[in-house]
Image (cartoon, rainbow, N blue to C red):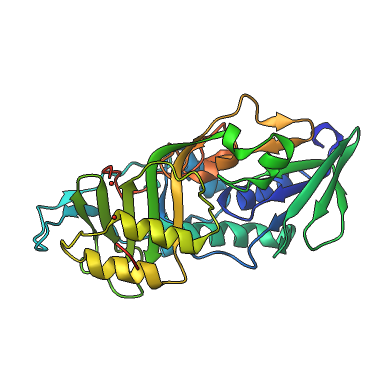
Length: 331
């Protein structure tokens, strides 16, 4: 047993949380995962499982499931305002020591597959969140928004950029999260892609729109430069739509007006700022942080998320929607 510990509470049922829970059970511990959402979420970006992460997913025996869910993107093409396509650029790929090639998969599919690998041996609690932590010499008393209070030997914050565990145990988000001047919005389009194997990129100064073929269904990303919004609330979808609309106001090239209108009307919009997370320590007594909660340049990190449980990580995985930095339209 790790230092006599047996029970571990993990906040966040995303990529890092489910992966960590899987490995803790194999070390003889009893993990519980609590997730604020009422189920697995559908939003987010395509991510690359590559490098050290490939060895991890091989050991977890989920390579076949990831391969079945992999996106179809193998190249990039730029689009001009009239919709004319540039020459195709292939996306380079690497392989693990055993010969497994990189796997690009949607964030939702990756999180689902990792959850399915862990769920038989792990207690998952959805639609609840941690509201208070009180550490003692032999454990952490945890209060929840909905459930009864419980005691755990260890608490892990795997709850991302806006970590509640980090706020409760380490301090205010503003002390550790530094916005880098870029915001990102993504949403599925619910239709087949124009190009089955190519990411289409439309770029103007300070603004990018990308359509990704994902897995037979197109998804769109808006990546744009924007000053820090001092009143930004990562849960305020009305605010997100307003910022997005203003950022692309007046842009009439390619499919931008149509895609922007659809993003402003969807109920499945992911929106957040690209931020750097930096702490001097990832632990405070019996509370520790992993993934984006601990250290990252969110959305554009180096190394796929599964590696967060095997080595210090910068958090989020790199996307194949390139960062062509980006400056406004109303919904």
